[in-house]
Length: 261
Image (cartoon, rainbow, N blue to C red; front, side, top):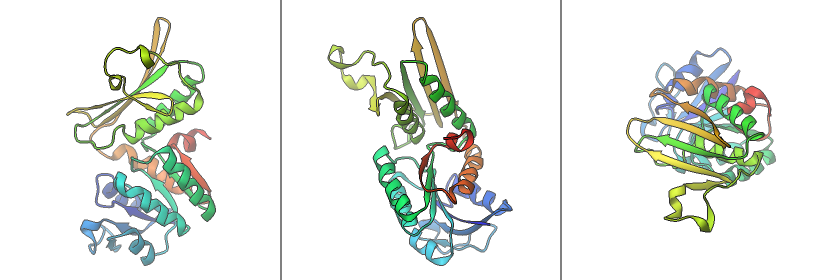
């Protein structure tokens, strides 16, 4: 039985995730964190919500911390858990490649693992897997990140992770860049790794991520669109929670768990 603590347990993903953990035969909800709800029980259980990660990990033996909180909090939460020998699953966006490199060193020193994904949807994992395969053969691509108008992180964690991992396959052909541009250079978006990323923030979107490959007289577009509920992310998060125990170091991407490293 794998014992789980959920940070952000009252949130959009955290609340249904807690219900899924309680229903799973091989998982146990050992702790929960939500500062605004501290002292109250998690609905449907006798687990008391803690105000901090430290309090939750002190209260019960825990194998895995799952974090669905906020970009400004997740790095600290992950460090606390890893240094205590607790595996971590990160569903919160906002961490950079540098953050993950530093967390990898901490995790390896402690002999535990961290699994992170900008998007724990299985369909999003298929997008990643397909895009990385395509990048091995195609030379030019850019990423477009669509999200609701109030989303604070730009690009989204999904788009950032996709751009960084595409950059790890090869450096794409650079088009319309450098001193030859006419007009403000920021109109071409931002460079994440070696990949150009464009973030749109408009009403009506939840989170959508698209990678477009271009070649002579043809184009390939791969896109994932998320709906308004947290349902797509629950199954993949549970896959990661089960997989993190026994691993060491940082693994980025649900696709790597589903399709291999």
